[in-house]
Length: 385
Ligand code: ADP
Ligand code: MG
Image 1 (cartoon, rainbow, N blue to C red):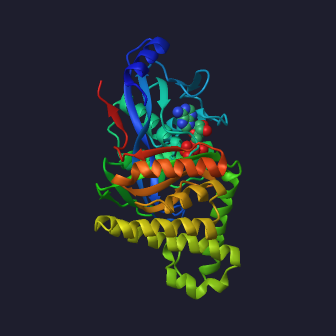
Image 2 (cartoon, rainbow, N blue to C red):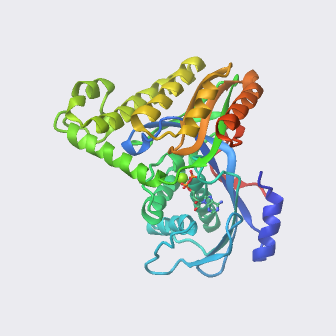
Image 3 (tube, helix red, strand yellow):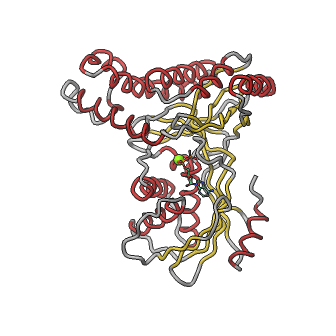
């Protein structure tokens, strides 16, 4: 856990001023994977793990930034006419400043110190936590009241256009709009959302597989291309569709033979996953946790077999969870090819889960997983001094 007093003391030592502190959470997606860039539905929850930014204004228009996870201090001039990415972690920070300024905001220069307890590259969205915490801090120092949806969009734009990762809106949106004890159902096309309370008798347990297979970025872009190909081939048969969001399970079943087999499987994941998200949100709202868990299991099988974004380690974790008494559902979460699983576990079964899944995963892979209970927390905000 990041200690706020230590962060403030380190900031004073580094930059010689008293900072404001802001934080933005990581997230776990309960269901709705790879649907965001298909204009579809997702159901994430914000975590109590977060990225913290200590920040103080400067008299000039420089940004100086240090992360406790990285070496050195980076400096940028907000007045540089054509800022180019440096192809390192600082692009997330500078990209947000660039996109906020392009949207018409004139930022103050600032010194920033960043600390985080969101695991990096584990599918819990450390990147959006970094972008959103920095964006909020820069606006806060400039005295601007933050529109949370606008901030999420500018942060997504930074990751798309400055970092060069074509992510959807989910991660930035939940980092901005998350609420304690709730998941959030988001329509990624209209950005309409609804908070859904999580049943207090269940726990969300995250297992970090501790593996990350390197080809993930390339595979992500390939999946996006297959989805686009599917829409292009279906559009003559289903006039008016703009994205896989517009295709129903029945329509895909009726017209599936218009698609090459691989494209069909990719599209089937997205189309059935959108349907599962809506049913899952309704189940959670109705207190039907067993039905919710069954949809998580179907989602995992669809990602494993049709979308092919799981990996051996994630499948081991999910199958161990499925075999543990008191587990209502389990699936991989995040982009895939490593990272984390999320399981819905009865509160009284969490210790049993920890022991059996931990031991089983070590026996199967030789790796000790990180297993923890996710406590759905608040979206971005300033921390009281
Ligand atoms: P995820 O969002 O799933 O954690 P990404 O690959 O999208 O994984 O983002 C991880 C990248 O974000 C890191 O490689 C790093 O560049 C940047 N990052 C995230 N958190 C921090 C941090 N606290 N300090 C510096 N860079 C960070
Ligand atoms: Mg990310």
